[in-house]
Image (tube, protein in one colour):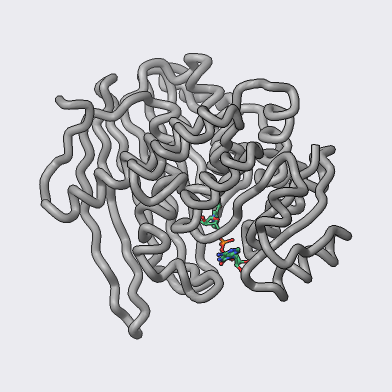
Length: 330
Ligand SMILES: NC(=O)c1ccc[n+]([C@@H]2O[C@H](COP(=O)([O-])OP(=O)(O)OC[C@H]3O[C@@H](n4cnc5c(N)ncnc54)[C@H](O)[C@@H]3O)[C@@H](O)[C@H]2O)c1
């Protein structure tokens, strides 16, 4: 199948690496920033298209790596053209837009994959596999962390909440989705944030608590308040039968998976270390391509993308009102 990418910034380049290794026929790229499209095209020996409409016509799958406020219109356009779609996260900036995108793709009979890459990081996959296999027993307390600096992007679009959705929708969405993928549906959301204004460089730092239907709770920490270059993520999950703990800065493997009743023994979850692990963006693109080619389900459904956005928007609502937001009418 022929594939093209719209957008040649950070994600355009990350996805290009994946397409090159996917077995798909990677034919072209198009971007508003023509120079970035030209460079990406030269790197991969593909064509740089002057406009995305011509690229869309030339492919079977279009991969949207453009600023988040453009996702809706481009997905609708691609669905009208009957192309399968890979779209970077967040699916959209409003629930109405996300629902319209899913409906349009269903109606057109095209596949829509939302690129929630954290689901493809080996540590996060291994932790989920252990949980799904019952190794942690009943989940109780989940702590997820993702802290770094505010990215800018072309034309500094990340700094405009109307374009990126802000830190919670752009960044914390990953862990909101991951928490839901391991613990199920959420009943209530509460959030607190602070905006640092040090050196005129605003950066949000937030804490979100989720109460799940199962009774489990999650504490999700996210921030864009650190200086450029700093990025740290972490997983800390406690269940009735075991614990999982991993921090990005101290180890690239899932750290000891400890069973409380066997504290002297350390059972390691078998995952490759980062030196031999595949780039998660490559894993993600290969997965999406194979699922489209073989008509198999995606690991992350468009509805998962929608639900992650629902959680992020609920957290923003909680910040605005100072109140707990109840989901699902409870
Ligand atoms: N999954 C992740 O880890 C991750 C990381 C960063 C960004 N993202 C998401 O990926 C998307 C892109 O982010 P980025 O960091 O690559 O941004 P970027 O600013 O680095 O690149 C954006 C690209 O889109 C192009 N573009 C802008 N407007 C366009 C238009 N109207 N038509 C065609 N091209 C246009 C720009 O020229 C540029 O090439 C966003 O939705 C963002 O939230 C995901």
